[in-house]
Image (cartoon, rainbow, N blue to C red; front, side, top):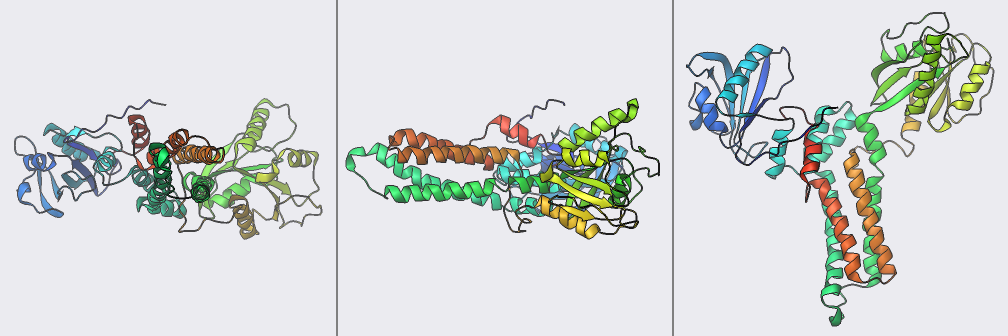
Length: 458
């Protein structure tokens, strides 16, 4: 993977980038932001840009340095600080297509703008106080959202729901820190702002609330990143038929010949409102054929790596030795046993398993029961509330973990009657960790890690 070094934006710089995806389209949007954005636009646009009111759109021509027209465009002016970045901002809506967009962009750079790096407009917004760091991350999550739940979670974070929770934790811990600092600064005064029991109760409550937020990471990650679902089974039990049925297209070859699928097949689909990476595996059986053997090895590895498994059995025949071996190998906590081909016969054997469903992949019987079984495995504690604040970033999870650990050290120290000056350092560490989530006291490395993930033009 390419190593990315983010060049930190300097106040007053004017940057530009194409904000729409590459390729042919009706229009392309080029964004210019910085102290000289309006002056620059005035040099390349046919109209009197300096006289335009903020948040107005104007038709005209982008002109080359000799005054010849490059393209007919709409130009939008957004004056600071009432813009996304907090800087003077101009957007140019030109005709889509790589040649015209490239020529307009080249003219903007020729006039004095610097080509923006990925995420640099959002970085401007963060540095100008228009967004905190958690909200800036939500912008990229909103763009990358693959399902309705991911979009809702990103939208709540963009509106500040996560930031408000973090600020609430900080207020509560700051109040405790103030008492401890007073004990350190005025030990001889015998100040008693609050009792030790009340202080411990406040710390306990805040720590438990942080743990509750931290515990949402599993569902937040599931919503944002999706899951991998592995179709496993002996040869010819209908794995490829089920894959095609779930995808709604003929992705995998289906024949009566056992061992048709000899490698992993992957595709993406939506199930239960979530994004899934669906993996069809080679049928597992004993074989000496070299290619099939490698496919079976990959199937077993996919079984271990997958978030969960659909283990298919053929309802039209009795269990084979391969079937029984797979029932032994499959991890029970993430596996649903699926009796397939119930259009031919109903299962005659009983399997002791937590989750068993019966379907016909060919006739698409039993799919609602299958989806319900999938939901139960995914949402063991119930599906997330649409209004619930969830964390989706590993960075937030780690910061909360550090803050919780420090608070637990504070609680332990108070109970052991340790000197308050030792305890306050742990509390300051907790406050600093919480601050990194919303962008307080963050290093350049953290900013690089966050904004380098953004797309160009955002």
